[in-house]
Image (tube, rainbow, N blue to C red; front, side, top):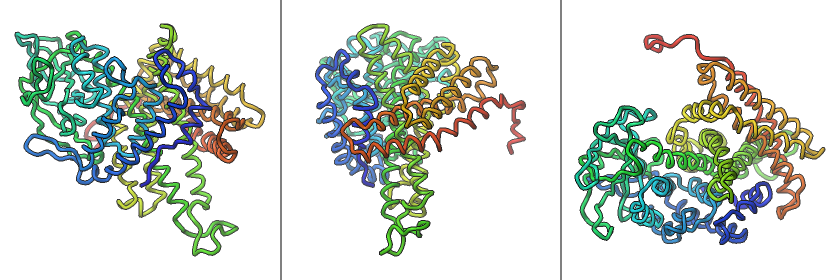
Length: 589
């Protein structure tokens, strides 16, 4: 599979549809002008094509392996990681204070998309490194920041997140891993963790484990949890890595459906020496800094896989000769016409492209909010951006991860029998992307968060603000986009109605319809992005070709006509209410 970062689409989206100038004008980004920004985007494409795509298949087969307690990375991964760190990609969006490049999160989103589209298993190690730095910057002590953050920023050390245990996943209040205070201010951690992404490997000098555990005697439930930091190898008095192993045992690598190049480990901690991060009993809040960053990242992962799937499906549809199109032959000298000329294939690919354009716009809009939340000049502006992003985060995580799965399956379907075998690589996309709908909170968990904490939590203020912006966009559309105007106003009205229902219906009914409400929200906001794309492309004042602009308008119309109507059924299903009877076990047999 010949994946490339969609440079033309990103240039159009960021330079013409979204306000990149506003992002680059934020305090702290003075060193990044537009030429620098797009030069880095181009370099990202070169890096992922030359280093990550080339070892993606080896990551799938044979993948990572465990030998005598040490995890060894898949073939080619160590070399790719060395280039990744030496070229500064791991440090792209991290703070200059700790050796980072402090470039915009919008640019970081392009890196995340490119890494996921070319090699999702490899991409995950960067997400863990980035997340641990974010958590330590928010809650770590000055000592922890000064020692760990520079090493994690450079990639010389790598990070992990240890939450899940054999008996608990989403319900972290059930965690049993315990922490006992030592006389020297450290803690002894004992317990078992599973599903630990990149839990161990041989690519970095050290590994820093963030661990949720319960201090001996702490109250049960989530409020009794604290966060701890434990290195794989102990440090000397000058904070250099030694050869002395901490008491951490890798008891296995999970035999998974996909992302085989990412070692998902079961880890045993036995009186492991660790240090508390933040305050005792405040561990979940500290870990959520990392989890929220990870949820946005998972959305980009789904986006990257979706793009890879569309690229390979489109290429195959142009090259594969099958049957004759209705009417005029497109390949009269050949034995058959290419798949692309068949009406159903064109429908599938154009609709997929419309969904992809809108989803990418929504994802990068979210990345822009993250930049504003970190760097806007006033406290009020940072707070407003953070509030909008908080509402958008579960939508992006759920919708984009499910988009990745749908597009990967679409690519298999487009390839027919060749998609079901390994030759074209699309079956790996299906297997790899499937985890994105599960980790960092399933789609149902995201939906519950959206309706309870976000929409009901603020009385629907943020969503209704988005509705107002959708209507303002409709007012800005020209007469040539009358159909787009009608579709956008219909989407805005549906989102407003659905939000009112969430605010007024019984809690059980709302929770039962939460996933459908999330879909209504995602499709409605995507309609907003499609309208912005159509308006910009219709004006055609940028540097792209007239054919490119026409294609963007066609794709936007395809989304509004063929994908957006799914929201109608979700609105109806959402209001069906809570099931009247709980299934008994014997009824399920």
